[in-house]
Each structure stands twice: as C-alpha cells, then as structure tokens.
Image (cartoon, rainbow, N blue to C red; front, side, top):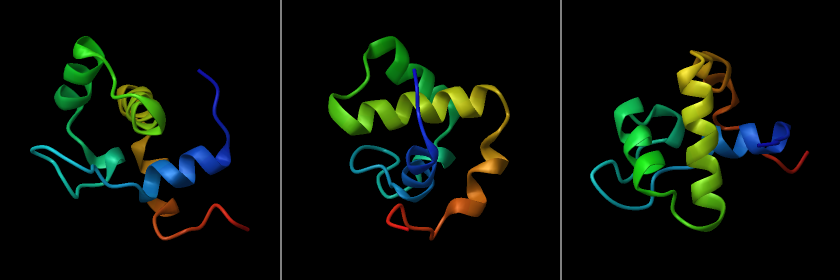
Length: 76
C-alpha cells in the first residue's frame, strides 16, 4: 500500500457514509470495526482504500498524527 500526504488529510476529514458508525471520522472508527471490514472485504473504491489506511495507522498507534489534519484541505 502506498499513500501520500493528501491521503492522510483526506483520511482525517472523511466521515463514514453508512452503517453503525455513520458520520464518524474514519480515523476514529473502532479498530475491531476496521478489522471486521478487513476480514469481510473492504468496500470498493476510495472508501475501501481509506479504511485500509485507517487500520494500518490505528494498528501502529499513529492516529494521533492524523487528528491535527482535521479541517485541512488537500488543495494547497
């Protein structure tokens, strides 16, 4: 998996569009929920990529690096 700074900003500012955690920031989703998606299969497209990135960051305990990016824009 490769990602760039814009991916991290997008992750910090994207909310879950459906389900039990609808409206919650992806980076704040519970790790067991992210693991469930990993086992079930990621949603298609950008959402699946961002959820996988969220799990990677959460599993490494690095989510504190993402929270300061909330409210930032990926468009310079």
